[in-house]
Length: 479
Image (cartoon, rainbow, N blue to C red):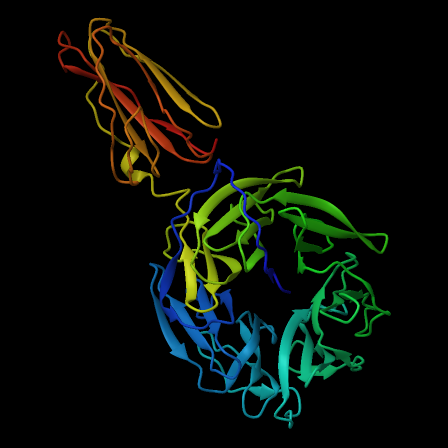
């Protein structure tokens, strides 16, 4: 099932972003550069670390990149003839991911079984070779059209300007039986998605003359007559058993449509703060709450729209993308820190990653030190956070003692009139004293939602045997 849509939009507007998720600017993935057509994420060698399969130009070999869990990859080229298009799935039930892919010479649909160490068997052809130089395998879609729990394939073969759509039913042992081939159609491609929520994946035909269509699965590998569909990307967005269609609207927005009584109706939409050319939208669970979120990849900005409990969307993050045509966002913990990093492809420059900085390592702030409370008492503290600010009030039990406050943050935020760019292992100011033993400190600029702020303060008590009284660390997280 596809989860990304590419369109060209040329409208610009501006808006402030009150972010709830935090990402570093997108950077290239070492060793995975150059023209990129598609990629898939999965654990290919069973070490619990996500790996990548990356494809470039049609006819070029695929690259397998095994992750080391710290941001590095060991890349190898598949010299077997495997090429784009391709998909990852377990087609023989051994819990190891396999490749369903096109081959170059001869041009066939094939399966290469995963061996569990990141390597694959030689391709096993599922179709006769295409003989015409003008013929090619255009798209591969995976799903389950007959409800038997096995992987089925929707194949599009292109002959000059006409397309042939073919359905292959999986037997669960890496073999497939072809169902009846569908009529030829001009310039179209096929995919599978359960649009009506009946448990059988339906046939979605895009770029067909007269508009996109969908054909309801009969549950046996055949399909009903085509009906009009909304142009866009099939993606399971708002929960339930049915799959929705995500597309760009006409008012600088992203629109989600669902099938209701055989017609597509709008069920959700989000307004884009900034719209750039050659943009795409993907559906991923960016924050790990089990709900699908929307990722807009523009040039040079990207946005994440978090899905709320009532199935609406709110702007949750902005980040810098690549100066490229950016597509196909996915989630991968690229450096093993427990974050949900966004990986996507830049068509001309290769794989990119925007690292998740929302839940940066907070260990250095869990124990900021300090002595035992002074003889004259322990300070009181009040910390209040709103969507855009943080305020802390400290009142000493010894009014004549000065107070100083240290702040720490998991990402940069202007604090108390002084710009700061803290990192997770850095303690920052302000350092404040007050002869009254009380102090009020505020962040003077908006603090992104979801940012973790740490504060600790000390009372200097000249009369105490220890000389210093310390509060416990205050952690304000995920507001």
